[in-house]
Figure 1 (tube, helix red, strand yellow):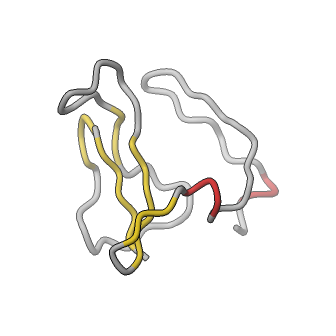
Figure 2 (tube, rainbow, N blue to C red):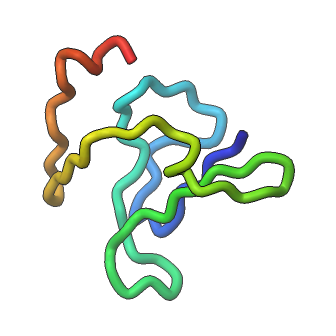
Length: 79
């Protein structure tokens, strides 16, 4: 599997970097023809593109304002 993250304002890691769950990897931007700040995220395998909603476990929605990151839930630390 390969994950794709697009429209970033700034990438904070490089391809091949080892990261842990919860690591901030980029800041959201609006590059290309995007008219609003957002994240384009997809999962690919063998030339096929998959909607991440069908492959990743359901999580509660967490929204953070610019420059804010929510504290991880104690239950999530081992995931």
